[in-house]
Length: 155
Figure 1 (cartoon, rainbow, N blue to C red):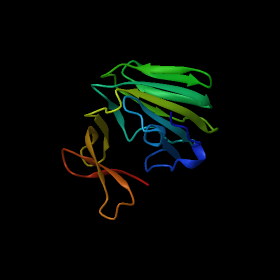
Figure 2 (tube, rainbow, N blue to C red; figure 1 turned 135 degrees about the vertical axis):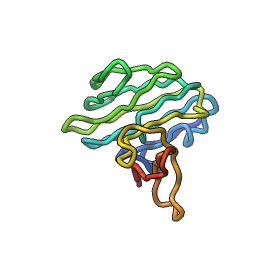
Figure 3 (cartoon, helix red, strand yellow; figure 1 turned 90 degrees about the horizontal axis):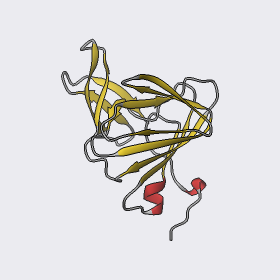
Figure 4 (cartoon, rainbow, N blue to C red; figure 1 turned 180 degrees about the vertical axis):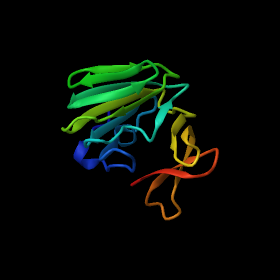
């Protein structure tokens, strides 16, 4: 058995104000588990994405999260959950004025390849992206695979 307090788990770099990897802290083998707190305007992910080999469940504990999907936006209120099957495109965000607190669970733990698109101003639309850690290791950046432009920077 493993046991941990959220206060003892460091927040990780990314687009959310708080992202704590419970799967790392609890040493899970088959399940990815992340705790999130999103300030207004923040997102769960670095871009609109899908995990071809992983399903994900988001449980919203507080606030309201809006998920962009291929079928349109889906609103998930506190006390509700949403599931994305392997291969479904999604990006959750906080469009409200209050903080969103949520748990994200994914199986299998290793999502392997994640496909992601973001808007690239240089290319004029959404393009495939890759993620890199900056040389000084103080931020994650998203880069357009078509032109190499930086499309996002997350600390």
